[in-house]
Length: 67
Image (cartoon, rainbow, N blue to C red; front, side, top):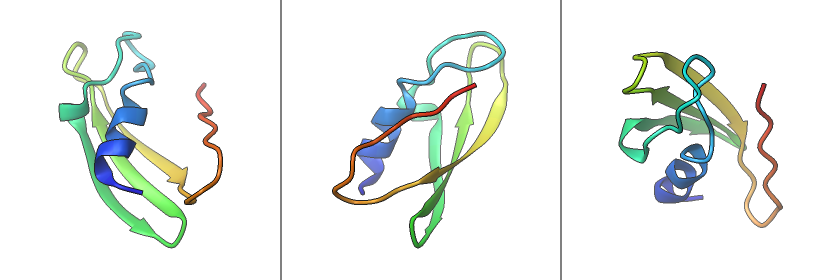
């Protein structure tokens, strides 16, 4: 799964503090271990930062789970 695709997925999520969508420029791919990927997000509106751990599998449907 390429970095552009992951960043595009993250722009569909909203920050938990201010409710603004993340910008792809503020999403950093930290790494991947087998099917587990780690992504850092930063909201320019409220300055909140977060860490996202996601299961990344090629060829399967994607389900985003948010709180």
